Length: 381
Image (cartoon, rainbow, N blue to C red; front, side, top):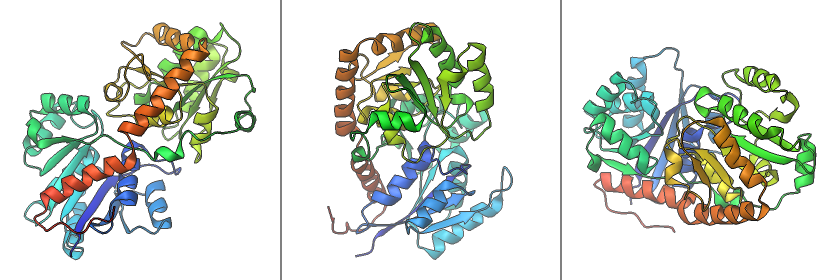
């Protein structure tokens, strides 16, 4: 019986091998979707870690060079792929590719599904107009969290019934394994007894690392063993300015930037606390990874984490952006080993029950199948 043919489309700027949240979602859909029911290929616009990784692992990947802001040739290229591979679903990620996917599928048999991963793309007037016109005409719009879906619908006037919430998932088994904390700390030049606050994510303004350094500075002098580690690709060359910010507090040696780490799960395992300082997050995969690693989380109230964290149970959500208040909440946990452990165990349970990757991909499978008028193929799982 014929499978449903899906084309996953994303624009990438990653060159270090580090995958952003949207790229990770696409990567996991390609890896975990049921091959007995779906034939899937990826179109990566740009070049970087994602297309190289997919090719290396044997998945079908097309690439397109995106040299300027708008390129009508991309619409023609997507149409060619639709025809050549008899594509049923074109699933796009992030605002720019959502635009191209919508345009390319017009007057073709393919249905378009667009996923929004955050506020970017519809926070401005033009973005709201675009999504207001086309969001209702798309087969479906996927939002990665309930708060994001509500915000998107309110701002763009896309009817709520055309928006599906599919939370991101992770491979739970990759996180939470025992690690040699002393050996990992030695690898990164950290003292065995250091109290490590960890934040993971590519270095860019929306991650709010300037705020996190200010918050860390407000508690650093209370305990000289406290260290802040930021793990992520310096894709916009902003780490130097953040190092200078730490230096102005006299903390250059206690704020570490590790760049992209392929085995970041060991760093989660060696840390004591996870901090999310973002200005805005549609979801936050790193928060779920930290919870799966039994790390207590302190997060800014940046939209997506409201759908992940139960405040006071498996993490703490701090309203507003006062660095001293945020720092104070981190200090409370660092001083309370028992509470950190209890919160970490609760976080692990949340990750297992709510954010397993196979459950997330199964929701995409259900969505894709609902949009294609074709008899169900035999399920392999």
